[in-house]
Image (cartoon, rainbow over all chains, first blue to last red):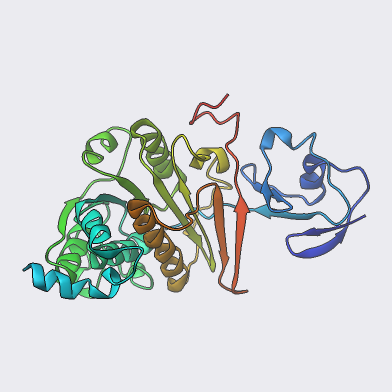
Length: 66
Length: 244
């Protein structure tokens, strides 16, 4: 199915959760911020939060410089 | 003197959202600028120019040449000098009526409570996760708003964390990310944009006007010229704000 991941259309396997999507995308930052359709997703929800067709998902690395 | 002040602030007191009463509120406010690097350089100047009555600035560093591409409160004349002194002199030159308290110390769990005496709002000017964690915990303990800003490269984030009303910093940012041996790159306007938003948030929070970044994280991409607002919700498992 198709999702918008960090602004790019991606074809991903069906039935993914946020957790499996992070693994699929090979995101290595353990402190990643995840946004799904404009809303922040709790880390504790990653393995239960499903990813749906046409979802807009952003993996955000926090900006901590000053 | 009063007439001189009236003239100084006339372009903002004519705004119905501010007016003479708002100007008085700004004059009565005390703000902690936690770090006078890229972010603090700009927030200091805008808040002083707006007539914030008391600005405390805390930073343990000295001015280095590599700071000057973005930390525009400092100048070559202050290379090697404490950043807080450099900033205090510049602030007083801009607005001599502002009370400035420079504290040439790195912010830690040990000194933050003392730094927050009389402070109404904490403005983030730090450059690392650990200091922000100290500021966040202090914000929660003292029930003070924490106006977060973070920058890297061409990207920035800004949010206002209000104890009891919003998610806190540690609800959203849970750690320092992937460690790096080198300082991250940054172009000056990135810090300028984020810090300008922080200054705007601070003024609005003091005055109680407008729609602030409560439970919203503004993300700015300078390369793409995109602004994006992420809806935040308090994390029930956050170890800092105790919403378990």
